[in-house]
Image 1: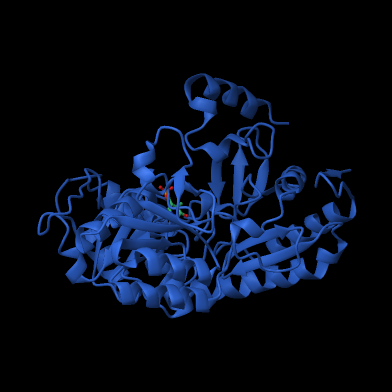
Image 2: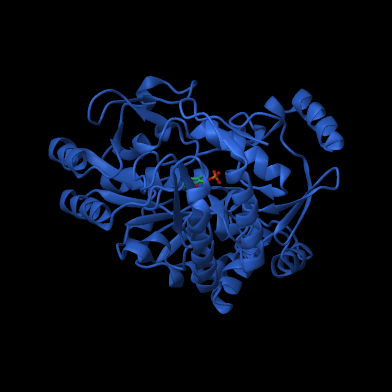
Length: 439
Ligand SMILES: *Cc1c(COP(=O)(O)O)cnc(C)c1O
């Protein structure tokens, strides 16, 4: 029964476009009505009708310590009792900056903003201002927030020409953006040969996690680093998902390759709106007020959000949460691998630390968005609704990853695997359309 959820969502559709404040929440990829959430507690979310779901979405990544973790809630209460925003320097932003700088390799300074999008937008501007060049490069299958110049899709041909992937963006906003395929050394090398001297920055999710989990080969990231160095191009690692999620050094430590600028979001705010971009002092000095690259924010570095981020990072470090999460992730990987032969379709379990993704209709790791089977969305929507009926919440799209939190245990993983196995063995599968029906 979800009648109260339904009533509320009907009202939402009247006053919020499609009833939501961020598109994927509307369930359009999977069909049906979204659930209106009343509360979250540890690994559970509770809807407005009193139903409880074991949650693997973690608010799309930030909640690495689970829902309403007392460690974070207490820090928020304490900070808020002293004032929510001053628009002036405050101690929590300084301590959080020290924490970030000492955690992530190769960076000396950080500036806080209020979202991942804002972090990326500012990093691009800083890279252009620093290099005095205009071209930027991104990879298809990587998401960097809704920055105009990055909402592009590749045009025809091996690489390069791009067009806006959203309405409302003039063509010439994306004329200076080149789009490349992931996992493709040839097109990367060719682009640098042709235009390297004009490229201000290459931005990449080094472990792409917004179009499935497209783990890259280290050689590819290494070549990218070498080409950027050779041509004086700034390498931006967008670590909004991976930063402080897979370890204190993010994907930079995972590959042992350092970017020139890193962007953060999600985990760094402990569930409050925080983004950040970080680099060397030499590059950061180009930012206003010392440099000519303008960037500002009314609520940037506010003490409440900074305290939530700080409580999160300290807890992650002090309790060795990353090791726990990697072990738990491996346990989940083994569990799913032990039942996947029962699925009537191919399944590859992709994972880095506590980030996981069920790649459908394949038995190998997809490394580019082009290599994802087209039937995935259809199959996924059946799987999604069956899991929901079994009390499990995952993100409502075949292309979104799942997240473990410090509050998940092996029992929760067992519950998930049992339900998954039950669905696999009791569904019918249409090989051509990809549709599954669960009985
Ligand atoms: C979520 C995300 C963003 C955008 O962050 P918002 O806080 O939603 O604006 C940017 N880059 C990556 C890699 C992300 O996962």
